Amino acid sequence: MTTEGLTPSQTVGPFFSIGLSDATQNTLVPDGSVRIVGQVLDGAGDPVPDAVVELWQPGPKGTLWGRCGTDADGEFQFVTEKPAAEDGSAPAIDILVFARGLLRHVATRLYFPDEPANSDDPILGPLEPGERETLVARPDGDALRFDIRLQGERQTVFFAV
Image 1 (cartoon, one colour):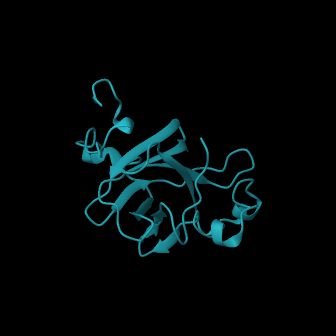
Image 2 (cartoon, rainbow, N blue to C red):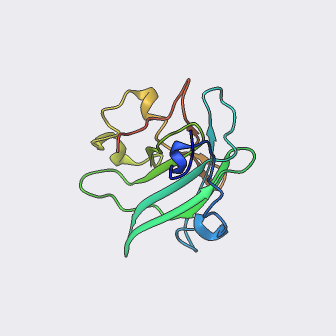
Image 3 (cartoon, rainbow, N blue to C red):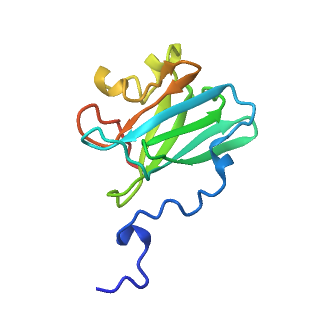
């Protein structure tokens, strides 16, 4: 079989270092009040050192977007701000994860802890408690921690896109 003309998702990767040369891509708001840290973990709970995490969120002047590759410990971080609630939903940030072994990215959401609107959110509210907690960041020093488990015990809830 020849690989000529195939896309990266059809060949062996990872190819994620391409496009990550700008280290400022993980700063959505330069003077942001929220720092998000986390790890991408595989089904065995081991770090995924070559994943890419993207954040998408509403901002005052349109959509904010950021990208961060994971380091050797599977860790990533972003600087942003808490988005406003929209359309009866709790404030949330949409997240895409690209990683080896995934033919397509996976999509999830980060919700903020201690947010009163979480219980009424049309996506978060109906989930079982164990599922719900995979989508809510937790305080970690001066940051919010949001670990992403790709499969296995305590797998993060992912959404069809």
